[in-house]
Image (cartoon, rainbow, N blue to C red; front, side, top):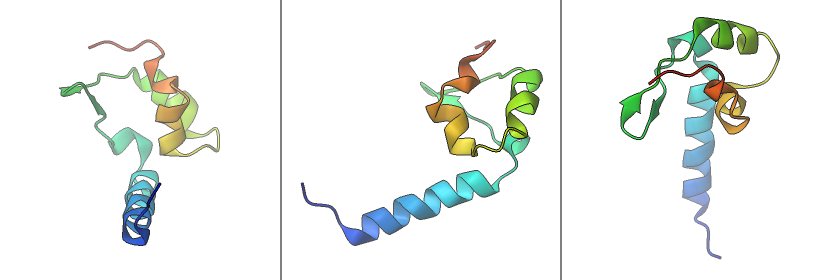
Length: 67
């Protein structure tokens, strides 16, 4: 596997931008559709101490999701 250092720096920069944004202010898109995530799901997760990226990787965003 070859990995460009610049690519890793870009990825980290993008993750930082996602994590620095207030969770309720993010419009999440999946399969070219904006997800409608119940505000209670966002509120419950927002104060748990995990990052916005963790909100996605943990699949927490899928709780009570409507498309």
